[in-house]
Length: 198
Length: 198
Figure 1 (tube, one colour):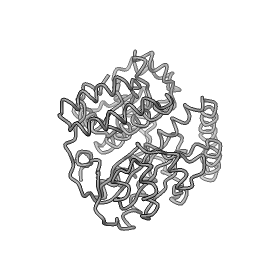
Figure 2: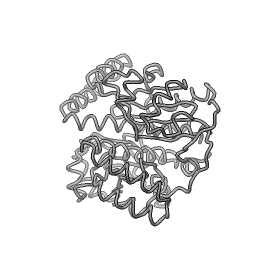
Figure 3: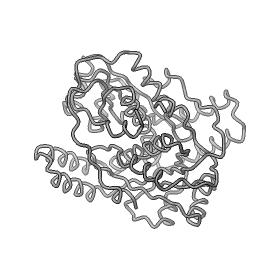
Figure 4: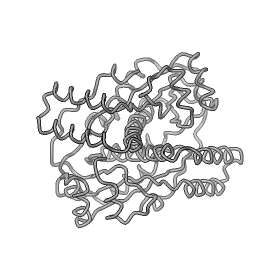
């Protein structure tokens, strides 16, 4: 499928068929998500994949009981990892292991240290932004693999954290229920290009 | 190009050839960006396209004089639009024009009103997240069109706003210099899948 066609056909699926996505297809999707870029290549995200019906049923009320949660095959929960110190330590260590030139290592670590000095909310918003890149890879990847999905952000992150037992630094940001659509797309509309450009 | 191949080949270009991207290709790219999804379909973003060498030269110091800014063909500045009241008014008006069923209209407007009550920094982070979706459409769209690009977030947004004369509610979030690469990709590395999953 051409990329433009993929963008055009994708839509926010509201209901899924009771049909599981094969595990090998899910692995392909996860591999695509893994390739997402991020600032400094710090990869400040984690992904929780929920398959079992019982957990989905628990999460449903924290998602305004939208039908996607219980009906999807796999629920991908894209999380931001807000532990900047741990993230930059890991990055520095792996760059050393990969024998990155010292000059580049020092530049990247310098920027990371600068970012640690930013107001906490600014850094948090930046990290959340990176998680959105991964989620966008997920939603386009799902479409490319012939799956349907629905990116969702209207949910209770604290409830998700509690039910999924997530550590404090792992913040659910975008949900991506994935499966095979049981509904039909409504016409896609966007503001004209003139409204986008400034 | 298969989608997986597109993800694999894409890399952060550090230097571009002195060769302009044809305007019709840029139009195709902008049309792809326009298709990006967003929560409530509120499209809380604006895009500034910088072509002239003089403006790029002014922006260069606010981007740590990275070579991408002056060498690229088109510099796309993805901005978040943080004026929630104006965004939701526009959305409500256009949904009415599109004769969206009253029930859906009321639901969307209700969520928008709820979001207006969130802590300002939470809503701001959410809006920035949506701008990252558009930027990700831009970076994959560029790749799909045979262009090269480099997403960048390490720059001075206040300086960008000043130089580009952006209104206060329009916040530069991601830069995407676009053109034809004059460098070679370094090997792509990501943490293993086991580190991604939680």
